[in-house]
Image (tube, rainbow, N blue to C red; front, side, top):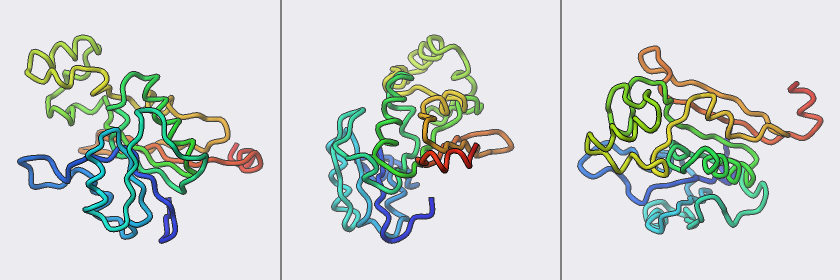
Length: 204
């Protein structure tokens, strides 16, 4: 993405907590922890508690949004960063609406999600059951006491093909990258940017 100190960054889908209760490792909002220009970050969430990020990170601006609609203008930001959020945004059509709304308001985009075909489901740390058909997977989650994750609105995993299909292709350069753990694709990254017609001809 090559940001600099002037780049306007949009962090889509921040958490209202700094970490997970009972765990020492920081997993929530780590981008804000490591990015040096927090005054250039606008963070969004559908949870009002995200307002606390303005207290934790100097100069950061928090905006409470609707699930699939933002108040921003087209290309208002240079880059959107969204880490492991899209799998929590509902049905495939709702996931598409989330991705396309955030692509609309930026020049470049960087989205990640866990790979459905990795043997361990990262939200539950359970082996293989997420490879079952969706209805059986959700029944198993309920039987295992994880019914809160059985709701499609809360967890809807994606394969690489599913992920790529969420992105508009017209006037966009879109690339898929795979993160491997023990030689198996564990996470997926899609990044890219808007291009004009002249650039698009060169890409082709």
